[in-house]
Amino acid sequence: MPGPDNSDSVLVQCGGSSQDCYERAARDCPDGYELLSSDTRTSTAMVPGMSHTTTSVVGGSLVNNTVTGPPGTVQNSQLELLIRCKNAGPAPDWNTSAPPDLALGYKLGGTPADGQATCERQGHSWTESASGGLCDGIAPSLSLDGRVGLAFCDGQVCRVDVMGHLASKIDVPWRHKLDRIREELSSHYGPPVRTQITTPDGCEDDHLLDCIVNGRAIRAYRWKWSSGPTIYLGLIAADGAPAIRIAYDVGHAQAEAAKDSL
Image (cartoon, rainbow, N blue to C red; front, side, top):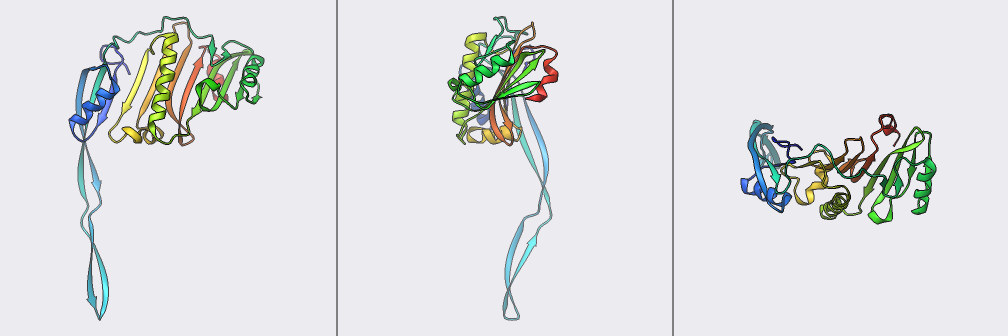
């Protein structure tokens, strides 16, 4: 997200000790970081009364009695750090490299027949409608299971939308895969102009995937060009499960009407 001076910034949210929060900030920015702002938010929640059970003898029989106390409140404090990773610098408005003309082998601006040929050349099956096409597999170079959706605008490919999955149930392979794709994109187009990383308390380590699915954590990057094209990369929720999404959009106005077809 943009920081106070339009720099790329990272929001770190955590409860517990402040040391945990600063350690998490150091993990998100391995080359060091600058603290832009900090804030402590306190919330109050109702909690049910505590229950306890006693056993007594009544008429020669054992009788359990459960007693529940009155409800109460509990206060939760959360520290929020807005940081900027070192060497991030002010966030530019646009990428200055040449915009993409290929998206994982698919030609942006190509014909539906080009899309079908690419899908089948990669060993997958293709289905098509008037507004888009669907390939039931992803380029082998990504090592992801999933699918690729193409949108057509005026008979040309105007959007390539990749939705990929890993078999792992723990977060480390997902983080590594997302980082490798980001590094590969950055090597071609320069760094993303927008980065959003939000890790609330309880979403660290192997809890990250659950937090992505329930919408508490965010991992997203965006490249964009003044001429219209954009690339989105993110760890998202899809059908109740985590997914890595890569979306190339040529920026045609007609593409907005075609997105829902994917």
